[in-house]
Structures are given as structure tokens and as C-alpha cells.
Picture 1 (tube, each protein chain N blue to C red):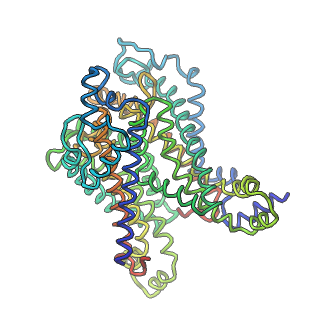
Picture 2 (picture 1 turned 30 degrees about the vertical axis):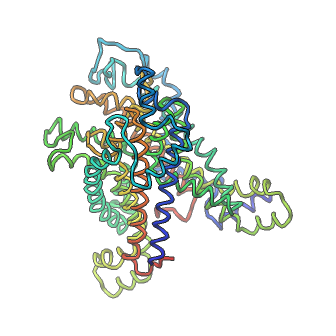
Picture 3 (picture 1 turned 90 degrees about the vertical axis):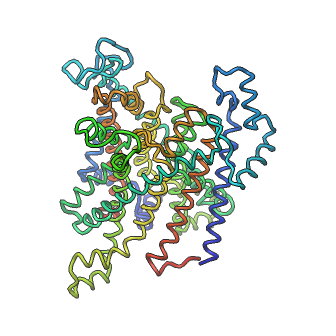
Length: 296
Length: 306
């Protein structure tokens, strides 16, 4: 039960904690609810893709090239006669997969770096922060693009490149949370009692630094989807014939004169997915941080 | 003040140096033979060897590093593998187009974003605020390449009002600039709104109101100046990003700037140009950041540099 009181104490300090009321507060905000619905629909589309369409997302049908939306093809067909709806549904899998794994890379590297930086401070902190500065002297997209240029194209490299580009944000965020948590009396008390560093970190510091990380991770899903699709658009992401939304847009670009729907729908899908994660992220932030509510 | 500037300039130099060193090492330490990659799969072994000698890749890495750094100090970024022109020339030729696009779209973003954000703050929680918030959400969630294509479909293909590609004439800048400005505008509006909300709650604003200053004057003359610092930061960062090549937008509109050069060079495996561009982008970004920090003092005399 010591944990509960610790959590409440921290709520006063940082005002950001995950509690039982979070979800309820989240559902009370109409915009967060819209975000949640979009994300759930996206997940459903990804999971149920084979059920929702009879078409094969990669099988070409050269007799049905660049068709406008119709009963047979609700969103039309692309330059190789493939059903656009089927490609979008299967593409949702890829979008979520890339987003989730890229954010995981950012979390897996960024969070420990931030914790080390904020908790141990000193030289290690200085070195880590200078490396983060270096990475932040590029925009996220430029960083990801340069890494892909060096690593080469393909699914794994895109995930690694986009993931690396999100590291500094997590490291910075966690560092500043840890810096403030470190000053709290109960941490001082644990250290005075001789609790080993590792235990203080895992049991006390990290759980309390978690809430802003959840918010950032949600917002990062939107950002990584945009970045990964941008790489796909340039032809430097996931390679054809994989139905990746950005690549679909990039390939369809050459046909905007004859059949605009080839570019309209994949772009709309990317846009909606990003809107969903952004709304959900903002909603989570408001639900987690009472001080921020209605401000931002 | 002078010592602050000197300190910051040294910081810029150090950052750019480390960026350059990192890119240099990455290009050479990654698996694969850069000379083979640049020359292409179809090139004969002789051609690859010749290219390797020409680019200095046959030297030991330490020697390459020394040459690289001493060239860098003299402002020499090497030679393009594709055109054999100096990398600095390739970049210099393309820079004006990127600068033009960055200036026009930043101006658009500021002129629309600041009033929009201020308006939303004044009407916080009401319909106008909600509308502005929606525009902001759309702006930050929009894939620029998609927005660009949709604008081309509407204004170039359907209405035939504006050119879809290239940089000839005054009209050509409109679509790419609007495309780019949408994201920045949303960002500027969002920050202006939250910064303004904070300032509007302060005592001196209440004083101004109670002594009968008209509402627009309160917002524009009293509150704005104090709300501006974070807005300047965002504008500067956006401008810095745009200078770093609006990669996707330039690609959509075939705009002959640095972003397009980067993409072309990546496809052509022209590593000297890619390497040079990354260094130049880091330099531009650091300089813009320095500029923003110096501007704080102009906007807010309370800011002290230390």
C-alpha cells in the first residue's frame, strides 16, 4: 500500500500519473473519443482485412486498370488493376506494425538513456545529452531519410531509421521527469536507507515518469506513421508490391491526371490515422494532467 | 553579450564538426563498398577502382579523415560523384530556390498563424476556438505530399489556374508555399494560442482592461509582445526546418531546391553530395537557432544572456 500513497504524493508534484480515473476522464472528452474510435477502427481494419475484402492486395488485374470507384471496387483500382480498398485494409497492418515497432525502438533506447541521464547526472548525462543535441540538429524526417539512405531501403531499415529518429524526444522527456522526481523526499529517503540504485530506479523513479512517456508514445505513433509514409512516398520505404500507404501514394502520383482516386484514398487513410493518434494523444495528456486541461 | 555570442558561435562550429565526423564515419563504416555502390552493379571492376581512387576511398580511413577535415575547414565538401562538380557548387546553385520557398511559406504561416492563434485564445472554449483547434489538428496531421497532390489536382488540373511543377514565374511558388505553410501555420497558431492564454490571465492585462483599453488594443499592444517569445521559437524552428530542404514538398512540385537535390543524390548514390548536404543542413539549423536566441533580447528586454 506504500505504492498508493507514493503515487498520490507524486500527483501533487508532477501532476501526471496514470490512475483509475484516467480512462474515465479520457472518455469524457469528445475529441479524445473520436481519436479512440479512429484508432480502434484502424486496428479492426488491420485485423479483419481478409474478412472485409475478397480481393488480393498484390494480385494484378491488367483488365481493370485505373477504374473509378464502383460497386465492385468501392475505392476504385490502381495502375495495376489492384483493388484500392483491399490494399488500404492490408496496408493498415503495415502502418500499425511500422508505427508500433518504430516507437518501440524509440522507447527501448530513449527511455533508458533518459533515466540514466537524469538519475546519475554528471559526465554520463553530459555525453548523452550532447549526442541527443547532435541528433536534434536534424529534423525527424531528414534524420530518418539520411539513415535509410545509408542503411538501404526495406521494412526493417525503415523501422530502425524512423525509430532512431524518435529517440531524442523520449530521452529528453524522461530525463526531465526523472530530474524532478529525483528531488522528491521519498527518493531521498530510499537512498538514505541504502536501497540500491537499480531498485530505486525500477520501483520508484520509472513508474512515476511513465505517464508523460505514454502520451509521447501515442503522439509519436502519429508522427512515425507520417515519417514512414513519407519515406514510402519517395520510394525509399517498404518496396512494391507491398501495399504500404505512402508507397501507394507515391506510385499513384504519376496517374493524378487520369485517375486522381489512386492518390486521394491512400492519402486520406494516412491523414485519418495520424489525426486519430494525435487526438488520442492529446486526450491522454489532458486526462493524465489535470493542470493542462483546457489550456494547450 | 559579446562573450555570449562568441560562446554560441563556438557551439555551432563544434556541433557542425561532430555532425560532419558522424556522417563521414557512417558512410565509410557501413557494410558494403561505397565505390561499388556509387558506380552501380553494372560497372566493371576497373571503373569501380577508378572511382575509388578519384573519391580517395582507397586511402586508409585515418588519412581520409585527415583530408576530409582539412578540406572541410577550408570550406571544401568534395566532389559530386555524379556530375564531378564541387559539392559546394551543387548546393550553392540550389540554395536560392529553397530559401525563396522557405521565406514565402514562413511569411504565410506567420501572417495567418499568429492572428488565428490569438483569436482562438481570446475566444477560448467557444466555437471559434474549436474551429481553430480543428484547423490546427488538420495542419499537424496532414501528409504534406498528399496535400500538395490534392492542391495540384484542384488548382492545376481542374481549374488550370496555377502551374503544377517547376519554379518558373511568380505563380509557381504559390502551391508549394501554401502546402508547406499549412503545417507551420498550424504549429504557430497552436503555440500562439497557448502562450496568449497564459498572458491574458496576468494582472497587467486585467489592469489594462479595467482602465478601459479597447479589447483589440489589449490583445495586440499589451499581451502580444509578452506572448511572442515561444512563438518566435517555433517560427525559427520551422524556418530552420524549411531551409533544411522541404524534401517532400520539393519532390511533389519538382521544385529545384536542396530537398530535391538530397533525394536525387540518394537515388544516384551520390554520397559526397548527401554527406555535404547533411553538413550544410546542420549548419543552417544551428545558425537559425542562434538567430532565434539573439532575437529574444530584441523582443523582450528582460532577457539576459549569460
